[in-house]
Image 1 (cartoon, rainbow, N blue to C red):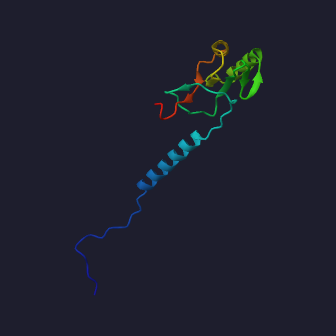
Image 2: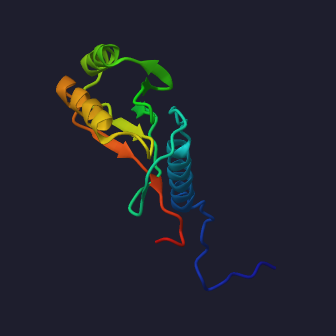
Length: 140
């Protein structure tokens, strides 16, 4: 004999909304991790320390450096100022929004950094920043 329940029978359903939420979370996580996987292309310089410094490097950027002797480097390659201006002009013609990061040794003359900054600005780049080393946690 078959007994019937007074409650109506419900069909089983597969809820996909939580599945979509999990997939979006995984997608966002992978995107954030892939953005942090960058390769720094600068020469070894003794950067000055700043308490408000952040160490976030982006993949499509131009790294310029000046060492203590005043020598210029573009992505680890030694260059002269006229060569650098030609390279910057060619890069600016391709992509006007490329960020430029200038690294200077702690013992670099201020005038050398200003000449480099002036050259970058003269070519037309507007997104220019100086790389500094973050201060140790105890100094903050």
